Image 1 (cartoon, helix red, strand yellow):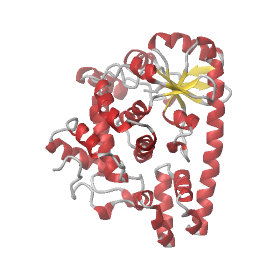
Image 2 (cartoon, one colour):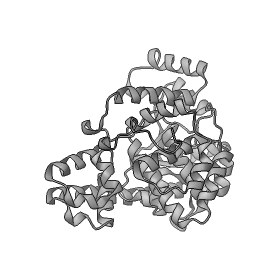
Image 3 (spheres, rainbow, N blue to C red):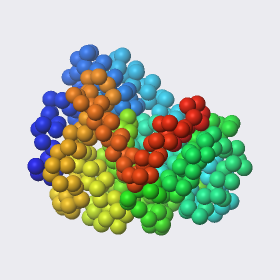
Image 4 (cartoon, rainbow, N blue to C red):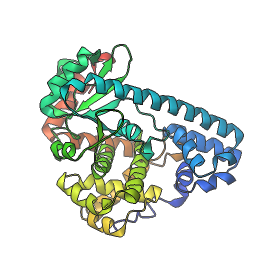
Amino acid sequence: MKPWTLSPASMPPAELPLLLHILRTPQQAASLSPAAWDTLLRQAESSLLSATLHYWLEQHGQLAHALPQAREQLAWAAVQARRHAQAAYWEIRLIGKELGGLGLPLLLLKGGAYAAAGLPPAAGRLFADIDVLVPEDSLPEVEAALMLHGWSGAKLDPYDQRYYREWMHELPPMTHVRRQTSIDVHHTILPRTAAQRPDPRLLRAAARPLAEPPGAAILAPADMVLHSATHLFADGEFDKGLRDLWDLHRLLTHFGAHEPGFWEALPARARQLELQRFMFYGLRYSVALFGTPVPPATRAAMAAAGPNPLLLAVMDGLFTRALMPRHPSCRRALAKLADFLLYVRGNWLRMPPLRLARHLFHKAFLTPKNPQQSGA
């Protein structure tokens, strides 16, 4: 198998969902039948990409050609996304003020970073919480400052508290008691127990400040791309997988066009942060599903980070099923098995085998069944 070509058995062109065809070639939307529009809207909604589809068609001058009913539905999704973006920006400003006395930059991750910096993935994107990255030795101060301003941690049992504080890469999730917004405070981007150990000091040192909101910062371009790929391909749940892969595609396309030296720096930065395998998968499936214009030299530099041909064929079969929209028209044979195997893989990547076995035993048999008591 060629290292950057998915085999026909892994991704038959006829089985590419309509949503992917339109995201790759939005001009095709002008010729869709009413039944095809219905399918497209359902696939987009199941992938959390309805508002994104609105902005994408509008950007390419295709929204006017949409079926009137479809255009109305997409417009409502765009209104919701705009209100969400306004609320998220306001929340980021409030969090910045609440943590302002600590002398730390408000280093934003994922959706909050895209929104605050006005990056392409922000168009139409919805996200549930604000993610921030702080030094590990500042966690007690950050948590205390947030609690002083009305943030409360999830009511977890002692085991789950230990799970987050000793083994994971973040504090237990916190919710503001009045605003009912959520924040995830990270001290690194992978669990302490994971095999890969990206140095968060390198991420913080290369971060770039934003002019607005005051005190906010985002990861450097290569680091943001690496985090996007790692967040997707180190995880075990892919219900938002296509949305997250679209984020990665948009970041790669944007930085590749506007950030001098981006493509040359990406492979070296991936090696430095021990994230080569996740970036290999990110480039591979972004190219395969969205046609991301990755230069041949970058592909060649990342090819060695991939698995052996046999394992790669297996992973192609799993990822090309799990990354599809969660709609019946897109669920290929063995999709549920792929979801399960990738869930097991995600947990395997988080912890050593013995600790993982103990963790899964505890979650299955010893954790209280009340959902309020289980957060890990």
